[in-house]
Image (cartoon, rainbow, N blue to C red; front, side, top):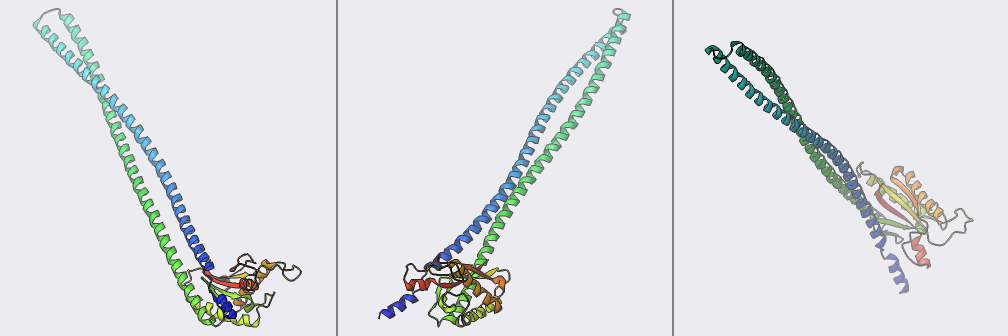
Amino acid sequence: MGLARNRRRERTVDFWPGFVDALSTLLMAIMFLLTVFVLAQFLLSREITGRDEVLTRLNSQIAELTELLALEKGNNQDIEDQLVNLQSSLANVESERSRLQQLLSQGTGSSNAANARVGDLTTQLNQEKQVSTRAMSQIDLLNQQIAALRAQIAAVEQALQASESKDQQSQTQIADLGRRLNVALAQRVQELNRYRSDFFGRLREILSDRENIRIVGDRFVFQSEVLFPVGGNELDPAGKVEMDKLATALLDLAKEIPAEINWVLRVDGHTDNSPLSGSGRYRDNWELSSARATSVVKYLISRGVPANRLVAAGFGEFQPIAAGDTPDVRNQNRRIELKLTER
C-alpha cells in the first residue's frame, strides 16, 4: 500500500511551473504591447510638438500681419482725411477764384489787384491739385499693400488648416498602426499556441508509456535517469531512443509551422541540490546542467532538426520543481525540460 501511494505521488502533475511559464508569456506579451504603445506615444508626441511649433509660427505671422494691416489702415485713413481737407480747400479756392473773376468782369475794385489775386489763387490751386494727386497715388499704393497683406493672411490660414488636417491624419495612422500591431501579435500568439498544442499532443501519444516522462504545464519533463548515466552528460542508448521519437515529432511539426513564426525548442538542463566535488569533469551543477542540455541539442541536430530552431540552457539546481532534500525530491529535480516557444 505504501508503494502504491508513492507511485500516485510520483504521477501527480504539478501545475505550478506551467502557471508560472504561462504568466511569464503573458507578461512578455504585455511588455511588448506596452513597448508598442510607448513607441507610438513617442512618435505622436514628436509629431504634435512639430505641429505646435508650426502653429506657433503661423499664429505669430498672422499677428504681425494683422498689426501691419491695422497700421496701414490707419495711414490710409489719415491720407483720406488729408485728401478730404485738400478737396475742401480746393473747393474754397475755386469759389474764391470765381468770385474774383466776377468782380473783375464787373469792373469793381482794382484790376491789377484782382489779377494778382487770381494768379495767387491759380498757383495755390495747382499746388493743391499736385498734393491731391500725390495723395491719390499713396492711397492706391496703400490699397495694393492691403490687398497683398490680405492675400498673405489667406495663405497663412490655408497653410494652418492644411497642417491641422495633416496632424489629424497622422494621429489616425498611428492609432491604426497600434491596432494592427495588436491584432498581429494576438494572431502570432494564437498560432504558436496551436502548434505547441499539436506538438505536445503528438509527444504525449509517443511517450505516454513512460512513467518517468511527465507533462508540467506547457513543458515535457524527462527525468535525467531516462537519458543520462549518473553524473554523465552523454545520452545512453535508452535516451537516444527517446530523442529519436522527439526528433521525428519535431521534424513533422516543422513542416506545418509557417515560416514567419520564429519558433524554437528550448532544452533546459536541471540538477538536484547535491554539490559536486569539483575534482571530476564538471566543477559544479551549472556546468553539468548546461552540458546535458547541449548534449540533447547536438543529438537532435544530428537527427536532422535545424540548429537555428534549438536552444540549450543550464539552470543548475536553482529552478527546482519540488521542495525538500529527500532522495525522491532530488530525483524529481534532476531533469531535462522541453518547451516550444518563440524566439
